[in-house]
Length: 209
Length: 209
DNA sequence: TGGTTTTTGTATCTTTTGTTACAATTCAGC
DNA sequence: GCTGAATTGTAACAAAAGATACAAAAACCA
Image 1 (cartoon, rainbow over the protein chains, first blue to last red):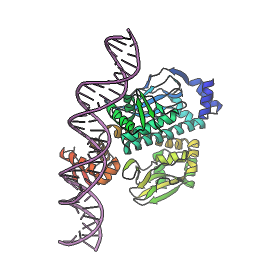
Image 2: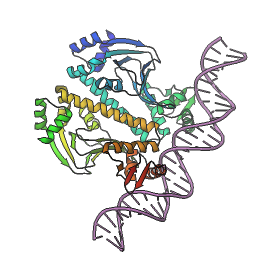
Image 3: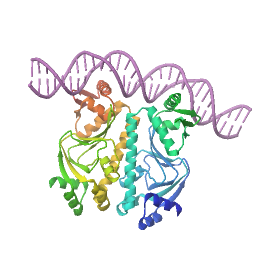
Image 4: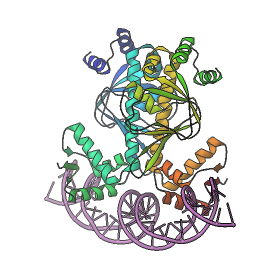
């Protein structure tokens, strides 16, 4: 299967035995855009690996939310992964933000394969490491930087990953990424526009330079 | 050796071969209080596991610092661990805050053992998971709570782990844990005292209730 | 095209946090 | 006990972020 092979390549999975295991126990699933795939206190039965599409993972309180990370193709959700090793409940939300293809693996295999197949072990280890580093980076930013700088960082990041100076997003959505309110984002963006660092349009931000 | 056995027990290391490896390649080291053991851009040659004592790990900018975590007996520094799998430089500081006994293992063994010995694999995996969860918890707190609540959380935590309602710490040190300034801490503590939630004394905070 | 919904703009006010600047207190060592 | 260093207290002001309350603009769609 074409999907599987590119997945194997990306994850450097070369053990035939592991491939066989994956193909007999994992399940492919198409998920529509904006489908909730993880909620607080929901019991985790599968580890989902994103093959196509994108999943947004965040935390929220009554009146705020903040981005934790996006799960991109060939990646998996670190918190689901952690849950397969030691069961704990984390109060996070995950939702597809595009039409997404998931490879779902029953949790009972995850730690077993990790002990058995070196490429799987490397996949889980790499997931832990990069996820930790990403979260640490967010933590520092939150601790040390003001909202204006955090916004610019976010926008520059998006611009980099999408190879485009145009970012299509509403102020409310931005606020939910940054852990603040819409009004704060609008005000800050307006200041940045006055400083000629970007141009604002309806649900659209154009970066200068 | 007494130290080693309690360490093996705590980490559930039971493979004789692994014990042999540890005993031939690892090195015990006594480190005095307030010794720097990790600085930004310092090359990591050893993975240090704390057997006795305590290590503080933090991040700093020109004018601020913020706590990342403490490394307690039988634990290791997640960022050193991550560095042994994929070398990257993280800009963190680590320093003993008590006289500390370290078990130092040359980095070349870490991922090897992880693939080879299941108890070692479990140790590294557990380290990744608990470290991630701890950082996530700090991240949420930072994102959603105000300084007053964060301070109380910190003090209650300390009180719990030390089994004492008395916390010996200066306002400046507290500020460095919370990522803010001394004046903010002093003011907030004073408010908490007026609310009868604690009593202040010189380098000492007494929790009520 | 008109009406409805969503999004954005913005003024005003409040709260929180940060900064500056000094004074007062406490302790440690002599 | 005296002295210097470290710690704490605090007032006053500044800046950042949050909250409230509406208005205006743009998009959607019937």
